[in-house]
Image 1 (cartoon, rainbow, N blue to C red):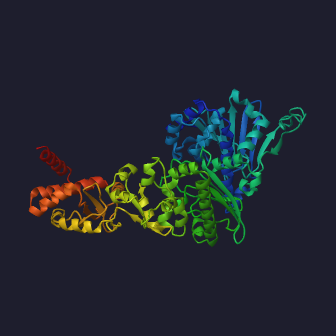
Image 2: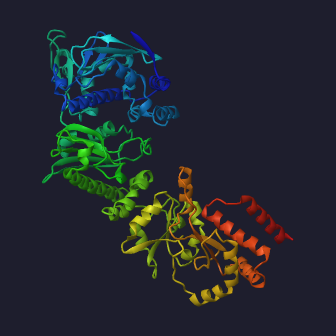
Image 3: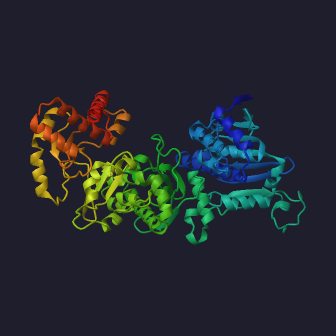
Length: 635
């Protein structure tokens, strides 16, 4: 017998599960039956290439058995089984399951519902909600040795050799007195039909004749006849049933089983495609992102079944990357059972499936956006930045995606602070004479609302989209136009706005020629060009992006990720109507070599750097120049 200590985090998980007051303790049966179903899936898949694994026990089944005198509930499967090392690893550690995040959730007390367990892959430990001791006897398929894992759920567990005639796993729960009702056949039957009716394998309940029917239809005395087995689930993959036969509760339980999400989804679509290719799809839109959504090590995809056999847990080829938040499954009759990731890349059948599934997923998002706008607001907050990737990388679908996008804008800023607008809303509100959809990009909505690049646009009553996600620059450039209107970045040098006072602007530009020439010398190497601006109203100056320069917030983001990013070129634009610029123009006309002129031009440039969110090359010099200006103004 070997005694092992639980991994430190497992001890904390068990302590919280056992000692916390949760109302939904019955969830343990769903978790353990789900584990058994997964073990059968794994065996069924391996048996495609290793048929010898099925020898000795051809049945693929989950069995529930009651040992009433010992107060023991047994959940048994004829699946893949576990070796000694796998018992120690799988039941003694949750290192791969995000256990730290799980513990934080439980300790915070945010969810008084043990179904949170499933999200973090620690469903086995829910057994301790109803049991004070658990034994697991398992024999791995293809081996002749069995092992027993035992623990009371405290600090240690024991693993020792055991006897088991066939492959599979048997979980024995020594029930606490207050949960003795879990020994009743009617209770087990009810829980299986409520939580696990979707399981594709038969779930058999073994009970004495006296326990066979909750209503007491059997009058046989206990022990008068040998135990009988009855199948208590429908044993048919839920997605293969007609939609009219499936309840909302069953759909939700299957969703929770597949995703380990503790909250119900926002919407679902269940469809069958017939014709050249035949397949069934069942997909959900989650409300909240999983804790590891941005983990690059985590594979994203949906479950792929072929003729009801699970062949891939995370098939990334079914949905485009920009829909990786959608959860669900596809069951195809046309793919080979020995499908591999390499074969999927070459499969014309799968390309057809992907196109159909992508269309259905976008239709579902359209439906939520139209019929449940409040729910769609939550979906967009969670997954909008992912969906927008489709604008940049997928020309085939970008127009469909564009209709689903929602953005902060100057129009929304004037109303509700959290209001978002669609591109169609924007186009419908465009002013007479406005030819483009204008946008600016930056780190936050607050920073953008005060951007000098908006001044002339606001003065003309033009709405501007305020884009704050890292992906937005590429998304807007990838989209290019919407409803015949080009998307134009108002921060770029080449932006030309309708000029209502062109003659005055030209006259002002002539007056500023000495200042522009002096500023070019002072800022040589720092800016590409100095020019008179038509976009400014209140600010004295601003920097605009020249050539292929990236916005400042993207340069900082890439720099933080360790990438070498050369500073992009900028132009400095001067506001010819601003008093400070006029004063500098007068000084430049008198003496372009005055050192104060160089200092104040540099100060305008540094002020513009701060405004766009770029770091200063010489913060001490900036502070010195501001101090000198203050002293000059006061004196």
